[in-house]
Image (cartoon, rainbow, N blue to C red; front, side):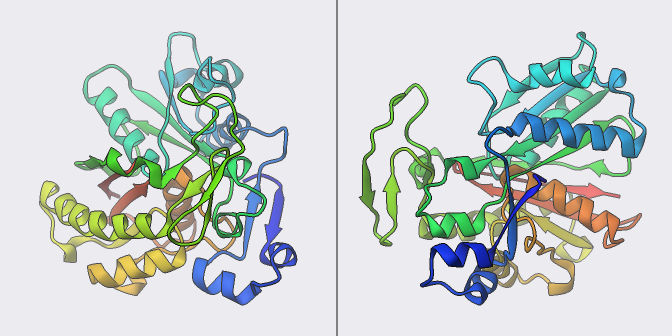
Length: 322
């Protein structure tokens, strides 16, 4: 997590029509970390990788594939993963690439890593997730500024480990692309426009900053997640009662509580913890898993359902068998 922390008290000073309690109760976030002006997703991903190497005594020279999930790369080109290969001391014989996904990115990365290993292409895949969404937010966008935090995570996926990765369910619906988007800056519209419009919910949509249609994303999630859960159970030949714990993308507290109730999941087995991190996009699932393991909420023999859903629109999930 970046060093800079922004609390709800600081946000409310800018938006006095809000209260600290209102932000905490609805969104579930008390504070969030923000990347410094000169701090990139690549910088944070590199720090997360070094912490992983140190904690688990991993030799960087044993890594034979590196993938980075980010929507805020250090450069348009080269791939930030290539820069990190050199910075982390990973052999030049390793493959490396970035892939552009948001809230489902961790799950997609696990799927690709499992495929590489199953095909005999790699043995030790370093999966990194890193995002600096706050660099895309308009200063007046109080809604998104209360939700999103910057952060990164690292995970080694190998032929050995503490959890077996099960069968995947993945999905995409690009018809909803405009519901979470930064319109300018890339090849479709490289120059800033300075234009803005008001959406149906009264939120200002700035072309040059991140826009999220909260209502549309909420409805998409309630349509996609219950169906995805059923498919994950079916593909892994499990029943809901077989799942010991659920770690889903930490979008916001209200959305997660609604998902839990709609899906009929027990409160004690459903992870919600974004009070000090906010929504870190592709890193929320790995941050959540690390938290659960550190606090012994997940133990040997546990079956854990993980899933991500959001920008794209895209979704994905699988089972981890500890």
